[in-house]
Structures are given as structure tokens and as C-alpha cells.
Image 1 (cartoon, rainbow, N blue to C red):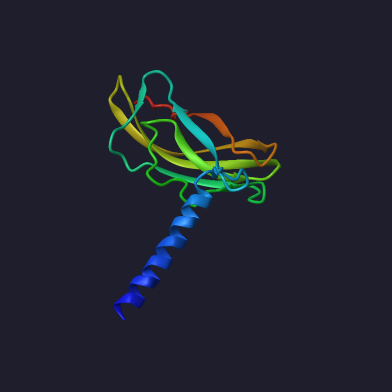
Image 2 (spheres, rainbow, N blue to C red):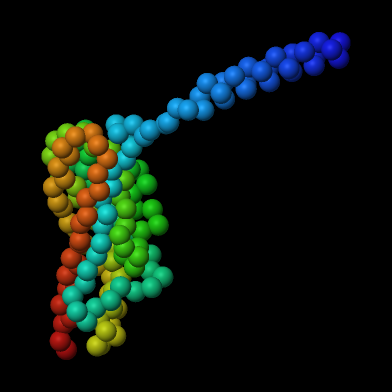
Amino acid sequence: MKIKILFVLAILGAIAALGIVLNSGKKIQADPKTSPSYIELSFSLPAGYQFTQSSPYQLSCESENPDIVKLSRHCGENFSPLHPPYPIAFRGNPGETNVKLTGVFYYCHQETQMCFYDTFETSFPVVVKNHSPSVISRTWDIQPKRISEP
């Protein structure tokens, strides 16, 4: 009985070794149709303002046409404008559509030391020329509401 078990193990080992030898020279390449593209999002505030540390920033992402730009369901996770660029993964098919972003930002006016949070929206076109992965860099200019004078 022990000899039969050893014989079966030897055969299985030989089959596994043959598979390793046959596949050792092949290179595995990423499939352009399944590799994601990215929107790299940076942020700017006017002079005299700064984003606040440790705030519960929020971001939601929406594609006007998910058949052209299908945004990752992880968009908005661990979002913070403090360490740009923030990557937004998507899968693209040739065409053009708009992407809409809605964010909750926390910022302070440095001179008055008054801090605020507001919801901002932006929308921009995304053109996908082919199935190849691409990186689109985008800067979101945040324009704080005016500080009212007493």
C-alpha cells in the first residue's frame, strides 16, 4: 500500500514539474481591455486658504455614460485632498462622456483662522480613444464661499 501511495505522489510531482517547465519561458502581459485607466485628481485652493488635517472628507463619482467610462466602485474610499494626486480607477471604451464629482471639503482661512466645510461639484469631459489604459490628470480648483464681513 505504501508503494502505491509513493508511486502516485511521484507521478503527481512529475506532472507538476512538467507544467512548470512548459510555462517557464512564457511572459504574462496585462490585457489592455481589463487593465484600468486612472483619473489623477489634484486640488487647489486660493492663496490664504488651506485644507484641514484629519477631517472626514467625502467624494462621490458619477459617469454620465458607464458604457464609455465605468468608474470603480471604490471611488471615494480613503479620500483626502491632502496627498494628491487622488487616483480614480475606471474602465474605458472608445467614446466621450462627462464625469461628475461631488466632494465635501474642509478648509480654513489662514488670516482669520475661520474654518469651513462645503459641498462642491465639478464636471468634466473624458475622451477614451481606445481600450489602452491611460492616465488623465485633472486639477479641481476649489473656490471657497466669501467670508461675510460683520
